[in-house]
Length: 87
Image (tube, rainbow, N blue to C red; front, side):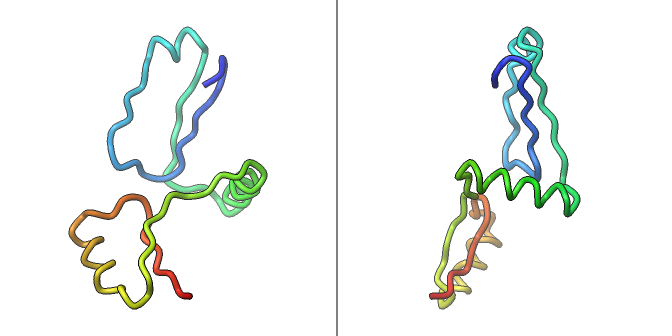
C-alpha cells in the first residue's frame, strides 16, 4: 500500500492474512473489511473493476461436469468461486 493507503476486503478470505502492523502504523495505512456491500457500493466496485481491468479468480467446469464440480466443492477443494460454463 502507498503511504496513507487503504485496503478494504469485501467478502470472506480463505486463510488468515498476515498484516505487517509496524508498516501500517508508520505509513498511516489502514486495512478494513466487510462481508458484503450495499447494491450501490457493489455497482461502484464493479465500475472500478471495469476501469482497472480487475477480474475475479474462478475455477471453471463445463456444465456436463456439474457432478464433479459439486464433489470438488463439497470436498472443500474449491478455491475462490466455481463457475459452470455453458458453451
